[in-house]
Image (cartoon, rainbow, N blue to C red):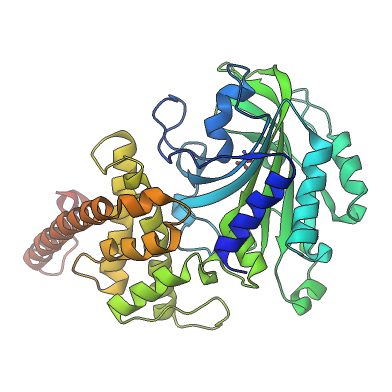
Length: 409
Ligand code: SER
């Protein structure tokens, strides 16, 4: 199934359950001092959870462009090195604002995954909040009992506050959650090590795909919890990971979300990316793969941020975007041998691929391309000059150590 169809099916499923489908909010937040970027689907609905407004429907579903590069949820340093974290990713979500709660949320999640998407039940594990004395929140018996009606009890895992109590930041709406994990390993691997032992253990093929949060509390600035005026549901499914599961891949980068971008990088650089199925690759090839993953991941984050109005700059959110782009330029420069701007050329591919669903990337394509090209050109100049200066310094030291202070000059 193509990623476009996977996204559509999610939205159609929740539409059939009475949800209103809304567009993604911009990736950049301008009106929430506690967050720089949308880091989850629920951020645009925060005020509704807090009881400060009423949504246009008590049931909403969407796919949200998210960026996890700063603050409480920050995956930046993992990106490129593993095959399932991203700076920008899409989060498929369904929400209940004071309407349905755990029973419907869990049953629908299960129905969608196992009956619509037809993920084999034997590949799924779920987790339930074990409770927290510190916060005075009990074990989530209700979620446990609902899951028990759907899945073997030995596939239900108890999780602590770190994994099973979701919070958007240091403050804000929060609550116990129930996650769904998928095991994408081969039968032989499954037979030798149980998938259960790998859940929440950073295994690249035993990954969380969906988080169902039962919003009941607000974390206040002093760290205490207060009850929200009503109970809500906030779910978030990692779109790229879902595509990996449904397209029979073991890396997000081997799905059609990323392959068109990777092909373009290969075409520009003359280098080859090897899919996750190719084992025992050389150290050199591994570095190439990491760099290509960094580039194709980062261009999405930067392009969508610019399309949503956040230009790279020297402060705040703009600086974060500039740093992401510079990380991609550095990886290209060092490992892909790209001494000329090239990342901007990926914007066209991205716009063709995502423009139907996210029209902003199509309508802003020229601006995004120009901004990235200028940033690349200027940073490549800086890198080039810096390296020449460094070469001079090294030449002058005639073999002895170069001081850190000198290098940082
Ligand atoms: N807010 C939860 C998360 O981001 C579920 O949407 O994981």
